[in-house]
Image (cartoon, rainbow, N blue to C red):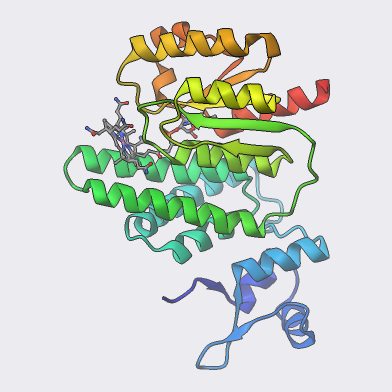
Length: 291
Ligand code: B12
């Protein structure tokens, strides 16, 4: 598969230097490149990210004195375009292509949470809408999920390694919920903030999670529910879970579309109902300052 690579001009624009400087970096071996059959240099996203980290360069596009309103409009248009392109890579199962899009967004200065909230989640929502309309199959949903998970792994490899904060977070999706991506994204967000994470993934029974909580005493519990088929049973299980773990006073974050419903939220008391991964970060940063 053809990898999306950056041209000399694109790298120069990202780094706010001249084309000649980029060529010099290439010639000296500081920034590795490949050559097209025509002899032109091509720079892989991962390589630019490595260079960015090592040289401590702020690789953001310079837009001179562009007004804030215009900059915001340009960003929205660019996110929309990227989300649409990402959707095609996910449904097509093109892992490398999807990873390059995520890494490209990171190089353009998007935060990890905005890559998740504004790129991956909308692309997956589109998958869901097309499945609902009968235009995509369940197998395509599975492929899109798998491709998204693997692309996120690749993105993680180019992010700076954070200093560990010594705290442990536990994640899991509730029993009966087979959606894997939400806890995978939550895990990545926590790890990027320096947390250690035990992610039990989809369909995790709360009685089993309670045993893990008793064993490891985490600093945070993060539960996800995208679909909740039996609210009565889930809320009963949750009540028992909070009774068993309550004495440890561990904050609980609940996330996922099931908790968009206020009636459901009332039956699942928690410290935070996260509507986005950005909210999770704000919450955990508040926690850390109290430690
Ligand atoms: C992929 C997928 C599947 C795959 C999952 C494969 C896998 N291995 O994971 C499969 C095929 C298994 C599946 C099955 C089903 N699915 Co499904 N699925 C999806 C799809 C397309 C993507 C889910 C996803 O990963 N989203 C990514 C998450 C992160 O995005 P998000 O939900 O928008 O989340 C936002 C916030 O809620 C928050 N957030 C979400 N989760 C979390 C978690 C935490 C911890 C935090 C902090 C934040 C957070 O962050 C996001 C915003 O930035 C969605 C469409 C959609 N709208 O999401 C449908 C969707 C969720 N599925 C749906 C349905 C109906 C089903 C089934 C019932 C279908 C059926 N009849 O069998 C089953 C249920 C299975 C079960 N018991 O769990 C519906 C749910 C409708 C509803 N009532 O709410 C959706 C919305 C599709 C649709 N448009 O109708 N599904």
